[in-house]
Every structure is written in structure tokens, then in C-alpha cells.
Image (cartoon, rainbow, N blue to C red; front, side, top):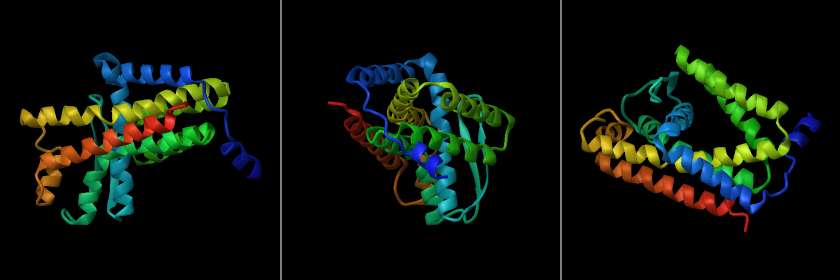
Length: 232
């Protein structure tokens, strides 16, 4: 166990500035352009639904499962009081989960704990797999988890570092775009059951306030995460 823990917390050298810059550019392309976004958005959805699930457990709601769909949407099924702080916090956690996870990952990266970061991602995916309740979601998690496991087992440390950097930037950048898309749908009245609108029905604040809150959290997380990732 001591050897395993030593392996997990070993510190890797800081990446070269150009590696950080190229990884940020790659993540921006993967998030900013429509075709690659169809793939990376699925990763953001995993983090989104994981946020709902984690908060449901923290607030002691009964977590019945998670579904991930082929259109990159998802739903987390919980049971308990339909109102109250637990329901509010569970609904609130989805859109802020990807940027906050990205911020935590940026901190681990800044500390040089790339190995710990990658193993934490694998553990997160395994926990999600135990909660999944549809075949497509299980296949996506198995494929993603398998890729992460292969990265751990077969990729050299330099490759692991680059992949980890790209993943962190995807979480930081990818936490912003779904909120912009959400507001566009709300303007067209196509998102009546969105997290923001559910929160509006649960509280005295309008849905637009929650969209703004999600946006502020995501932008602040991206800014602070970029500050942590800055090698200069």
C-alpha cells in the first residue's frame, strides 16, 4: 500500500510552456467547433450528471441511477422530497460540476500530481458505471474508462501529462459552452425542464438568475484554472 500511495502522489516535472499552450489550443478546438464538440460534450455530460449524483448522495436523497443518451444529454434519477434544500442543491450541482472539477484538476496538475489526477478520473468513471441505468450510458463509460486505463498502463509519463492537460482544459472550456447553449434554448422556449427552470420553480428566483450564476462560476473557474496552469 505504501508503494501504491507513493506511486499515486509522485510529483511530475512541470510541462514546458509550449506544451501547456498547445494543449489549451487543442482543447479550445475540441470545444469550440461543432463536429468535435459532439464528442467532447459527452464528456462534459458525464461530469454534469456526476455532479447531480454526488450532491444527491451528500444531501441524502435516494439516488436511483443515471442515464446517458446518444444526443449527449443525460438525466440523474433521485427520489425524496420534491422541494427543499436537498432538491435545490442537487439541481444546482449539474452545470457547475464540470468547471469546478476542471479547477480541481488544474490544481492537481499545477502541483505535479498527474498520476493521482488520472487515477481519480478512473475511479470517478467506475463509480458512475455502478450507477448507470441504460446500455448506451454503460458503453460510453466503459469506452471512456477503458481509454483512461490504457493510458495508465501503456502510455509513457510524457503522454499522460499531455492528455491530462488537454482533459483539464476541456473541462474548463467545456463548462462554459453548455450554459450558453442553455440560454439560447431558453430564449426559444425549448428548455422548460432545464436545471435553471427547475430551480426557478423550486425557489423564488427566476431561471435567468441561475443561468447567470452557472455562467459566473464557469468563467471564474476557467480564469482561475488558467492562472494555475500558467507555467510562466
